[in-house]
Image: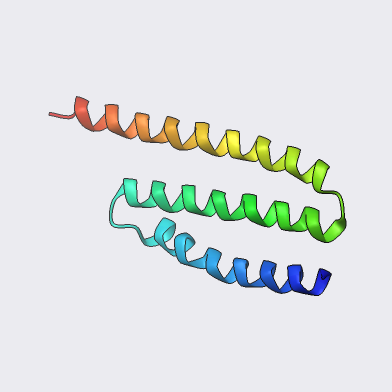
Length: 90
C-alpha cells in the first residue's frame, strides 16, 4: 500500500508543475495568484499523502490544516492588495 501512495505522490508532483508554470508565466497577476492557490492545494494533498505513507495521519492533518489557513490568508491578502492598488491608479 505504501508503494501505491508513493506512486500517487510522484504523480501529484508532476501535476503540480502545471499550476506552477502558471505562477511563473501567468499573463496577469490574478492568473499567478490562482496558480499559487492551486499549488498550495496540491501541497496540502502531498502533506496528507506523506501522513498516510508514514502512518502518522493525525500529525500531518494538523500540519495540513495550518498550511491551508496560511495559504487562504495569503491568497486573500495578496488579492486584496492588488485590487486596491489597481483602483488607486489614475
